[in-house]
Amino acid sequence: MKKILVVLLVLAVAGGVFAQGSFRLSGNVEIGTRLNLDTDKDDASKPDRATARGIGYNWWDAPRGQFQIRYVNEGLNAGLRWNTRGGGSEHEPFFSYDGENFTFKTGLFGAALFTAGNVPENTYAGTIGNTTYVKWLWGDYKFLDGLVDLHVAYRSEEYQFDYWTSDTTAGAAGIGVNSASGLGTQAFNHSGGGGQNGYHHNFFGTPATFTYVDQSNYLLARVNLDAINFGIMIPYLFGNTLHVTGNEGMDLSKDADNKYNGGLVNGVLKETIFGVKFSMSPVEFAAQVKVDNYGVYFGGKFFAGPVTAGLSFSGLLNPDRVTQRFIKIGGRVDYSAGVFGAGLMASLERHNGTVASGLENNYDQLIRVQPTFFYNAIPTHLSFKLDAGFYFFSRRETPVGGTERKDSDMTWAVEPQLFWTFLGTGARNSYGWAGPFYMGAPTGMIVRYRVASEGANKNDSTKIWSSGPIGAGWTSFNSLDVVFSWNF
Image (cartoon, rainbow, N blue to C red):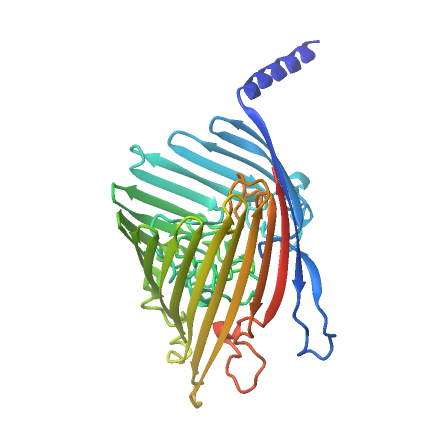
């Protein structure tokens, strides 16, 4: 009898606590098809035929359904999300709390947690250290009424910190992205601008900067004044976590204990980033300096009514003997008048060989020109967007003891898209995540057609594109994607 009374008392107390908040349900389904209209005319072993396969809108996604139950009570947000994708590896318990001057968030890999085992192979949960179950783990504080911010992440979500960014046309990559330099070959293809995966949803997207993070760990401190803020970011400080390596997944070798095999100094302190941003209408300016290899980023924008103009630069100004030298400069102009908008982005980037290899005078160079246009044909429902890109490659190669060779090439890509928002909640010209916790696109349809010429990796013995970032370009493609989404 006493045990029953205790249970009833606990349930009564719990019921009283939960009564103060509310449960919320949400979910989405996304089903897409890709009609690959390319024929395999260059492969005698394959018949000339089109193909169809299931896809999601984003390159990493697939047809899937998600369901989420959340309990919300003032700043508390806790719940569980089920996802049909990933063989159960993406069932996700989570909780977060948004206090008056602090926030923290945790997400877990549910399959590993509930089964006391590891998630299926080839997912990005990882098993090093004690991170088998941790998907996200971060928090922040605000001191002196927001004058000072302090962010701590053991494993971050995907995010481009805009504290010290402005125009990012000349951006490259971020913490843990690709090579030890934080720029490397991924400067050619990360977050926009072609690259190895021609079907990447961000083929025409905006590049990132040093402060782009995804599954990264770092300590960030920032001082916020009226028109200026500045601070410091120290990556890899907490170790034993995973870091994104471009579009291919995680690199387990880049935790703070063995990155460069350099420990605290080379593996952590040299990765430090200093940042500053100044904003006073109609201009803004931002800069980042990375200690390792004197990495720098500068960006600025000018605002004049519906027109925004930007210019940026990034590079490794004093690389070590084993790091590629890199510079990139770019700019863009955008016009937006509500239902109509257009823009033009252009950049030039160059990679030189390493001093250690004796190939420092070799280079790969890429010029990009990317126009864009959108029109909200029905402001409540329908938007049309057109992106295009023209890419001019050049390479100089002089093997040690060999004869100098030069080559150049040009490729292009075009992508028109139609976005239909079924519920009439407003036309959109991008995927447009709906609701909290990345619950997919709003209810509607997306039609995307993409065509591109042969990239610089063509199988041509007279060319010198056999290696390097340009050599890892794309093959020609011609595809029609149709994606259906439902969301509540």
